Image (tube, rainbow, N blue to C red; front, side, top):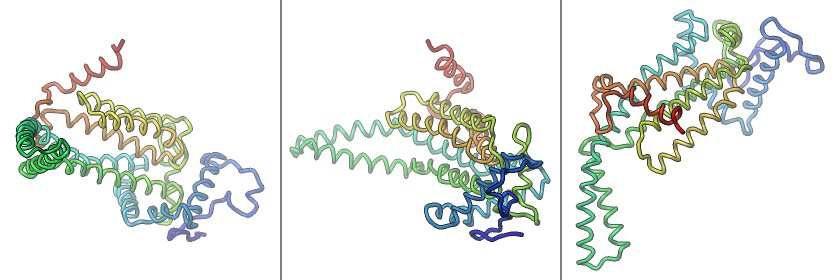
Length: 336
């Protein structure tokens, strides 16, 4: 028998039957007390979300059209391929990252390369403008504040004209973030819906399918990874991505340094967070991070950059992987 909650159909669980609260949980054939406890927690979470109050925003997100569309994509891939859910999650992640984020990442590098190539011209303009403003300030007896404001106003205008001329405004490089982050959110919420039994397919609970479609040390994708292997792997891969970015940036600004430390902290905090969600979500996070690392390394390849028509810059190297290994070795291994 199904009950309706927040626009979705939920199957009552055996552990919630009358009088179950006063009785100890009995082991089951698919995970015993641990899995039963997880399902109680999962249904309680969904019930709290659907009750209005502080969790109502999550209910709106969980039942939104983008999340529903993501669920349909996952179900479609699962039905079309017949793969177990662990492979289906990995395949969908690779397909989405390859078809969506890789082209956007290449475009991001294209924009940043054009901006980098403009820096000598921008410095030259800044030098001449500074001299011109100094002369005008002396003639018209401007105060230092007026001279500085005049310089900044004209400098912004001239730099903006350069960006328009070369069609490379830096804001265009942020398109990847505006697409990738929502996609990450929608996939995570969709998998949580599956893992908590909020979605059914062809009369069978997707939650029940996930419970038997894991692999290796996480055969139950609706359960937490008690070994912490998946959460720690997610943290390590994300830290590698951050360090690769930091190693390729020589002489980072103070703002870039702060951002790097912030992302490092987020990568570490992802470990305990990943340890509190179903393995299906953590598996997606791990696959997504591995794809992000692969794309980062691929976009260092001179041949691939040439294929994507990314302009050559002064900072480009003919041996990027060798240079990266040397920098990594010098910073973390041979450091005294």
